[in-house]
Length: 236
Image 1: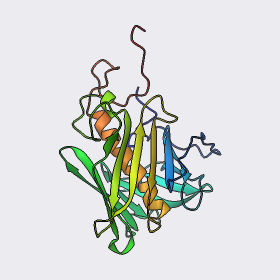
Image 2: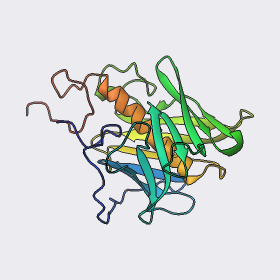
Image 3: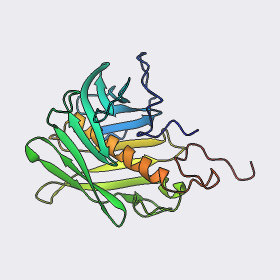
Image 4: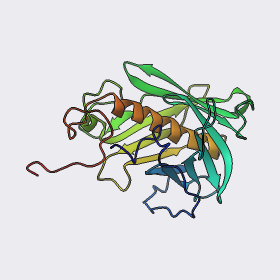
């Protein structure tokens, strides 16, 4: 049974309503946004307004076209996220699907490598490059062309550009079963990016990773696809 780290398959791991505590993980001093995966939720470690927020799956029965996740601050929802396709997220200020989005994350792919457009109010857009691997090992980009889950281990970073093409920051994701968390998201973002839009990037990247893991070989599960939750030493 695969559970724990899939962001699109979390319906069976709904928030219980009990007070939550987050694992403390190191956060780089330079980043303006940081978050990490904790089973069915994403703990937000840093935003310009502080930390302590979390992204959780919407509880109860979800009808067609309803929000998938909420951003919660102090236990209260402040934004709702619709994942309309892999890496595609609409952000609304209420749970009403008829409300106009206040922000969006829109993906595009080149040779299997995802690039994200961050759309804020009034059409303001930031565009990312492909997510390039930092260091050695595996594929050079975060790509749907990977052969196995082992190719996803590592750190991937994408430069952000403003509408004039100037560098405006960067996005990063760290993936691996031996990290402080299985997925760590952080970024340097301009002040025009709201906490809700920053959180939507984590939701978008999480859903893209879910798609890749569910369509590639998990070398530790006998040819099955799915997320690599635990590695086993050779000979055990």
